[in-house]
Length: 318
Image 1 (spheres, rainbow, N blue to C red):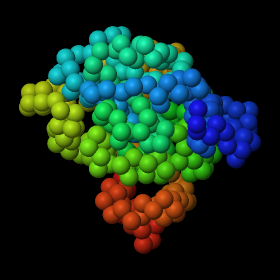
Image 2 (tube, one colour; image 1 turned 90 degrees about the horizontal axis):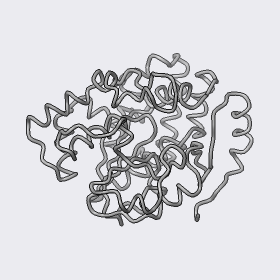
Image 3 (cartoon, one colour; image 1 turned 120 degrees about the horizontal axis):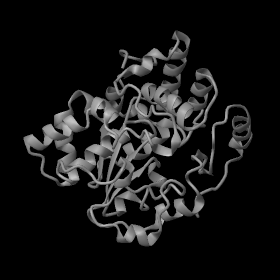
């Protein structure tokens, strides 16, 4: 494994969290905290196995709408036919996970096309090696960080055994000490490659606001037809209400966790969690990280975020 396997800056914090708030860390690579499901052998496999034409990998920072989008992708590739198996997770591959999704190189090789993969890794740690050198098609979905941090907080409570208060979690998120690291670093790593022929970068908010056009664009990128009737079927099947009610997609039987994988599924719900002071603190942090990452120069990204760089505030509530 060529990546740096530890980062001394996280050692004390890791121990403190494990003891006080039960937030489970696994490996730390390149200074990025990973969940305990990612083990050295599975990560190495995820980086080095051979991809092939027809492969599709959905990648996102955690809690950015990837479960919703993976179901859309499955229905696109199967042209509306209901996927097989007991659970949504039976229909995609997650090579980096070494406990829930134990895979071998031979199993990956023998899986028929189209192989659908899922990942939460930043670009330098992407599944299948360097994405632009791969025949795989990569779909990256991004979501506004205010909604991400709140959704991630509730997810960590119910699925990561985290017992700490909201204000502590908010601090961890802004320090990049949650699973998959700093949100801005993650976004930047894929944003910089968004014009590559085999990378499709989209926003959760755009999918919510203009679903039909975004689904057509996604299908065209994946090179699958999208007639009107198929679009209608997929739109209905992937609605928040349908996915929450459907035993196939609602994750109620996953790992004996509480039955609340889906929370709200709307844009802007994160605003409800922030106090006025926390909101100002978060806006200031966003302004600083935009400058530190150089993303402050990306006008289209600022437009998506609705962020005003002159006074470090969002134009409006998301």
